[in-house]
Amino acid sequence: MVANCVILDIGGVLEITPETGWVQQWEERLKLPPGTVHGRMHDVWQAGCVGSVCEQEVHEQVADRLGLDAPQVEAFMADLWTEYLGTPNEELIAYVRGLRGDCRLGILSNSFVGARERETELYRFDELVEQVVYSHEIGIEKPDPRAFEAACASLEVRPEDCLFIDDFAANVEAAQATGMQAHLFEDNARTITRIAAHLAAGPRVAGHVLLG
Image (cartoon, rainbow, N blue to C red; front, top):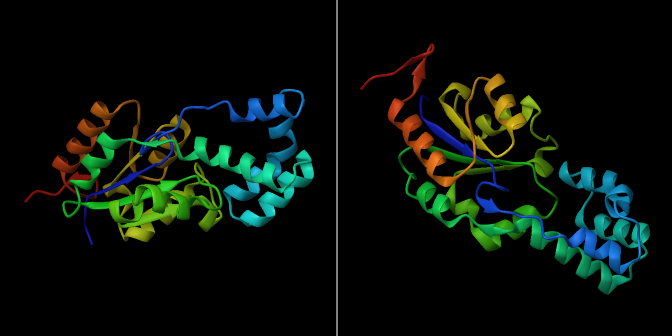
């Protein structure tokens, strides 16, 4: 099947996710030196990103490594998710919604265990695009080439017909290395212009644009 396709990242693209300072606030509250939380939790965060731990195990490790009781763990994780989920990029989401039926649409996100449930409830990304590929579900993070291959396979599209949009240059470069077209997200206006140009160009065959 030859079809134009747009695949987007979530955090920093479809979600606006500024740092909230929650980690520093917890370190101050617990009288821990700066950097302690991420230092103690680094391997757990990484495991959560590739789905090798479940949410309950994350909670248990937070309690054990930071010395928190059950209510504190719930508050700590609530702060984590507040920053993680951010707020919706309404303008871009509305634009992408208007593309349904004109091209294949997907999401490829480096994620954390529990993200699908929360983002589905808040933002209904499952209704915005056809396929949502999360790193914690496939066990692979961008910029690993296999992550981009998984996203294309989920939509049954060729890399050369896909425009991938991400806010990290390393992921954009990795997508290009797999044969995808890619765009570094900096603002909505430039991103919307790039998507429109991609769709206007049409699908490609052997490096050439198909006409008609």
